[in-house]
Image 1 (cartoon, rainbow, N blue to C red):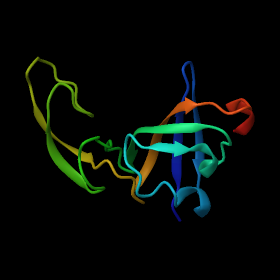
Image 2 (image 1 turned 135 degrees about the vertical axis):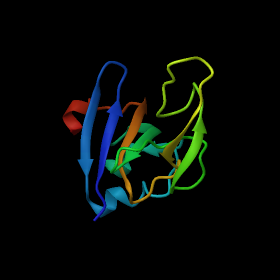
Image 3 (image 1 turned 30 degrees about the horizontal axis):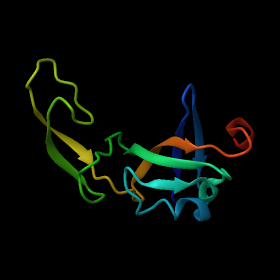
Image 4 (image 1 turned 90 degrees about the horizontal axis):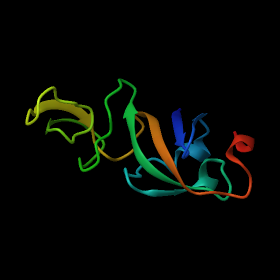
Amino acid sequence: MVRFQLNLADAKQSYKKEIDEDSMTRPLIGMSVGDELEGSTIGFEGYKFKITGGSDHSGFPMAPGVDGAMPKRILIGHRGVGYKPQRKGRRRRKRVRGSLISEDIYQINLKITERGSSPIEELL
């Protein structure tokens, strides 16, 4: 059974929702960071979301621009996901996940791009 924790980002607040129903999780598998998502597939009628990132069950972040869904070790500079250098110009090899959502992903970060008729608090 696949289970995802969704972090829904609003302009002022964020919300969490866990989904484990097969009808809601299957459409998410295979999507990539930056893709648009219809809210009706995950239980939010009238809403649209943009996938901004996520992490796997071990806590390694999804990196946009990294192909596939497997973990990889990439060289990250000052603008990379998962690394904040102490000095300018430092780079480091870090382990990240690819940008595709697979069954190994636990947390998915979503940004609200279009609102529905009912408030999101009622749908949670």
